[in-house]
Length: 402
Image 1: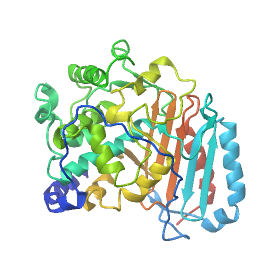
Image 2: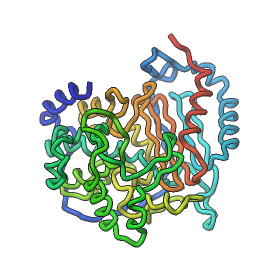
Image 3: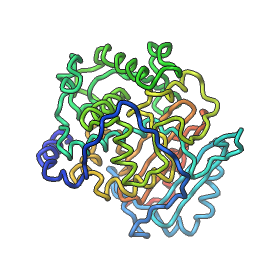
């Protein structure tokens, strides 16, 4: 399905280039730090308050909003009990249409500074970063500076497998490129650098030194599978996309995302620089914390954000002309693996999760904003994905299948 859609996508990109507002930028080899100013969350609104669209692949499923509204107090109490029982520390946000909104913040953002986690607290969001990287790629396609069928040898001439791997393979993770990050299991309970990188990647290295070590590692390893044959999650795909964005835009990856995505969407609390005002990570192990070192997370899992800004993303990425209409359709499409553009497509929702040291994140939303779930934590024992599963199981009691 993606191949057929991609053909249409590439043909129409030139005609739609003006929609993306793409402009050239100055070359920069270092990331541009983002200054964070606390903001108050502005919840999204949905035109329809009675029956938001919640269609999934199994059939048409709608929430019983009358029952939810009548029992909203009890539902919130039950969610509070779930959060407390799991000893989840961080920020949790859930919104269903205009009828139900739940917010919970627990734990310390900085125990020394006596600051508690709140809706405005900033966290590392791990692999949730990847959908932002994908949107930047599609902007460059809109502008005619990049093509999804471009092969990697165009950008990395010395990388021998590059002639068989396309930009689209990186976006949908069918490249076969080995992952520089090891994930302990599918629930993101822990993530670490590959053992070959653990001694060389250090906190004292510069951003560029750590980046070179990781890129050299990626390019020196054989492919795990033949390109275009199967899906295999690998953060290395999006790490390389960061370099491609930099080459095509003439800006650093971080500066490009700040200028072309964060700025127009007013995501003033988001960035990539660990020196910005971010929650302290608690109970993380030394190996996991390496993912937060300069140049390590990068375009794969290096982004910092908060609930307020992620809500701005759901408000604007598909409706404000940040990417073209065809790019929106492509970003919302999925192949046989139900994965594309850094997003898993499940039950009509777009979902991503990630772990970065002590930090974990879960971000799940419907394109029409009728169903949004965000959980962000700075405590290693807090499982954002598991909490999302519990909430969904509970809400299944309030659905009507037709």
